[in-house]
Length: 127
Image (cartoon, rainbow, N blue to C red; front, top):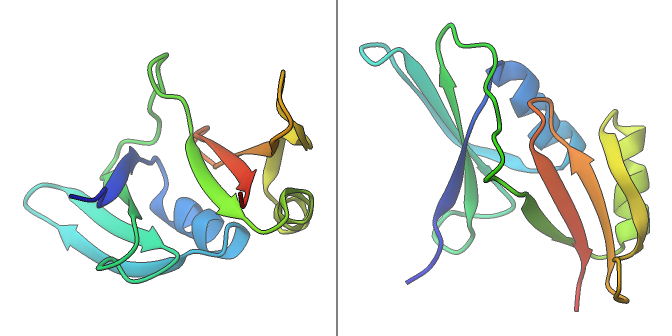
């Protein structure tokens, strides 16, 4: 077994595609519109879906906002250098929620960024 993808509902597909590709450096792997269902799916990631987990962005036509709720935590992305990755994301227009540094009560270096819909993304250094 392996984790295939995580689905996030987004209010503006183009804005989200720009964030995940231009700010986080993912590749748009595939995208398809479903006119009868009035939604579009876009899959993004850092490699081919046969070997890598993807993010599925679901845009329900005409829905511009979702409440994230209290159950969702965050996505996590492994990076070579958390400090550099956070600064690169800031330079490309990304919003930093927590600056890079040691986690509370630990030594692991982390940072948090936010996508355009408010989903939190944790940056973790390689172990």
